[in-house]
Image (tube, rainbow, N blue to C red; front, side):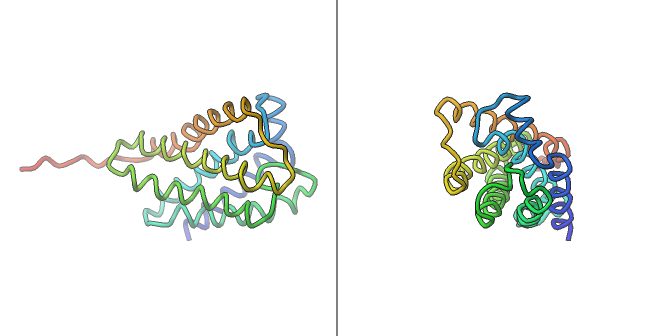
Amino acid sequence: MACVAVGLAGTVALIALFPGGVLSRITHGVLHLPGPGSGICALYGPLIVLCAFLAARWVRKPGAALLCCAVLGLLHSVFMPILFPSAKTAGTVGPLPLRILGVLLVGAFVECLTRLLARRSRWLRYLVSAACANLALLLFYWAAVYPLAGKRPVSAGGAAVLIGVALVAGAFLGGFVPALLSRERPRRANA
């Protein structure tokens, strides 16, 4: 139930923070990032990663991040186009199943990478997992969603910029707070 609550809260936050075309105006108009994909890598993806980590930290069971992402991906992908039908922004472009699958991919990356890096420091575990999950979402949108939505491919220079933005924004917007909230248990010395 907690995963559903975090997924619902994440959906409400994304819709409230970025109604209509606000996300595109921020990433293209204010930050002057190239596209397509700037909204995905700069704000949309990192916030999904943050929700996935928060659900995983709250529930502390395998699959929590994935379930949170399933709820968030479904609700956001269904309700954003209904509330803002003319908006062509992150989470509203492309076929519905692919938009949901992209968010599920974030949950899968968070689940797998945090387990893979479980013995590493919390900072490395959360920052690397968040950066990689966000980059995976961007690459998925470039490879699967945008071509079907008729979006032009990103230029090589634009791709390099957006990959850098995805890694940095994913790490710091998506992974920093969970790393702060994570409490490392002291290791016992062998007696």
